[in-house]
Image (cartoon, rainbow, N blue to C red):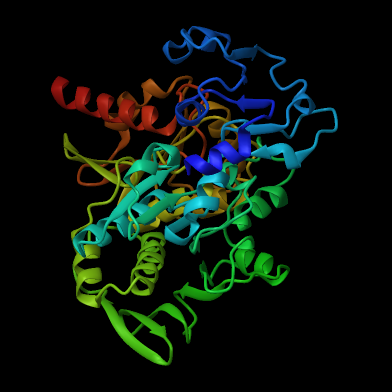
Length: 462
């Protein structure tokens, strides 16, 4: 990895575009290799100049503030951070000058990487794969969008290590090599604020398989029409494996007679009896389970270990997370549900949702199908927050069933009083927003933590 950094950057005019968590990770590794390379750091945040990492570095220039994206053509190599969108740049620039931490990492370690993308389910799937690998006593590192930058683990990667990499569309946008094992979970409308079109978002996602080579494997959701359609337009070199509820596959995972079955090379094997008690709820999680099982079978892990790993996996914070029972009401935190499809799956996964809290930052997502679903869902109380909530309320107002009551709040923190007054004892109050969080919160984690804080406060005040 260090040799690749030297080859790519030495003697070039280099720009670090973005100086958040990943940008700082890139800076640290570059300075290990090229301590006197002249770097420019561009970021909208003008306080970057005061970062402790940079105070003694005499080979750094800055381009900060609202015009930080001006002048990209002045640089021979640009390392772009995932949080930076280039869709609104008004001048022509050479995209071949752009690379990223993900691109460089994959160019060096792709043969050891299991990469997972999709609009929803990425974090659950990579964590489940990592969990099963550890149970099988396989060397495994969990990195990427789930929290740990790729460059931070380069010293930990032994020759037989498996690197489980959660990949967002932003990380995949500028890559030239795909993971050895690539997984596409699904494609829903999201991040429309960061792309010129939904199609551009989908194409960025599909880079996870576009740059594979013969001998690589591509596992994809055969039940997702958008995924199938996009694959049909591309000449992808990897070996295809599928996972599906509805289609029996000669190669991949599917559900048959209440069991997950894996088929490969003319052989079939039962992986999991679905009557066995597992902690991941909902059909969407069954798809994540099949994706993880397919990966682990491809890595040679025994069926018994895979089944044990699935049964013992507890799931993630903020994804249909049980918070507790207070005053006879069961509270679930699903703050990670930032698209309509995730919200609908959460309602379906839980048997008795009486009150649903949804809404937040409006990114222009189509909520018409969510409104239709909620109108026949059996959820009696719908609590809306933010501009997205206002728009969902507008969509459902004329089609709601007579037994439903709609509430529009001015602030997220107002929900406890409404919930306590209207929710039936013994039923569920679910936070599953179907919208981004950054109208009132920095991210979905902060929104979920605030939900749990307010629920705990309700308990203490009871």
